[in-house]
Length: 494
Image 1 (cartoon, rainbow, N blue to C red):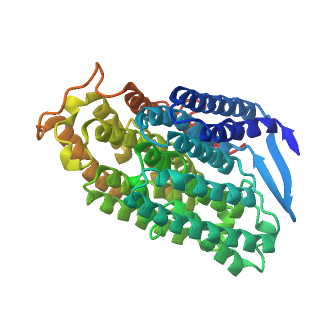
Image 2 (image 1 turned 90 degrees about the vertical axis):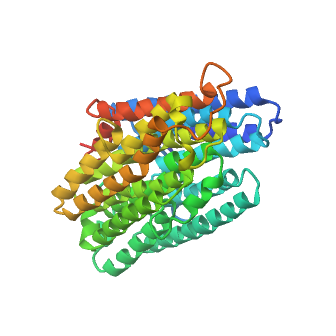
Image 3 (image 1 turned 60 degrees about the horizontal axis):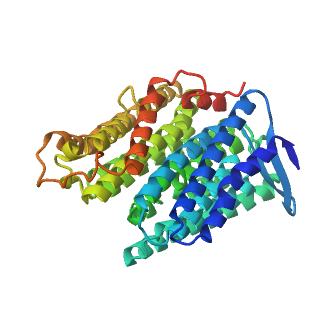
């Protein structure tokens, strides 16, 4: 059954799914056609997401429902939260596609890479528009399957080991998630996402089971969301190519976990029921521990990508923390950070990839004076890093400001200490490499640029674009249709 503009949702999935299948069959030398297909699919997807955003705000409904098995339905549906995640995913996917085309030029197995790359965005969009738990689980597992070949793409022993670690964590997490969904289904029947939660009618007499199911669901989603102690796969997966690292950290895998936690807390249980079950405070404590732990581990990393990976472990838990705090302001902070962290973190990974691909720089100690050779890349890196620290006027400030206000609104003043500690640690691991890049002498003379630009424009343009988006998301946060505006709509639909 298709209601309203439901065909548009199918078209969004098909714009990358069908193209991904076609790309698998392209010969390696068909570089131009492969690039054109990728860019066409990503552009169409972005246009369609913009179309349904406009329609949703205007009152249009979008739903697809298909009877799957027993009394389970596959449901795709648009709401304000899904639009927020869809906007992030479709925008960054187009930009990351441009970057990947430049980064993977001349690499082997490009058709396989871009085929799975496209299927990965299909799974992410399926997660985004899932209208119930069983649909979410199916696309969640599809995401695991389609990202594994990207993690092991290089085919080295290190990459294969990283892939095994990735599968071990995510398959166990996905299986546990299915157990939780089936258990909840046995109590409440088919569970569809609804603002304010949908379990009120079955809460009486089932409190211990609902509490246990909450733990199972959040712990299994915490694998992809990199909550400690389920975070170990993420730094290991940094052996993947830079576009994949950007994909894992900003758009797909870790965001799917955080997005799922938001769905469980606010759209399955509802904050009032979750609070009555006494599960929110433990979740907030787990997220706070992860925030500080990730920052401390990032501080100790010499490898740039691993430092960014542990930064993601920390920064992503801001989303979980905001979801666990009672009150609309904290919820807005969590949702807007879902977007803001993505655009800032993808900027940093683009810049790390540029330095590695152009100058062979992989470690923080090698960044001395690199801004003299790559000023545009380091400008973008600086914007992303300052945003991660949480300084105005960049997007990260907006997120932390709302999380802090939300903590005060909820009477959880201790959260301010966590945010302040994290901010200081963020500054401790981001500011020294920025200072070294801009003000220290290079260890040796860097090779001159081959053309007028410091690196390929296909690598440079995406980094500058996302850096600009990070700045604009902060400066224009009060504008209609900004991430902050959509986050507020998701929390307060009326």
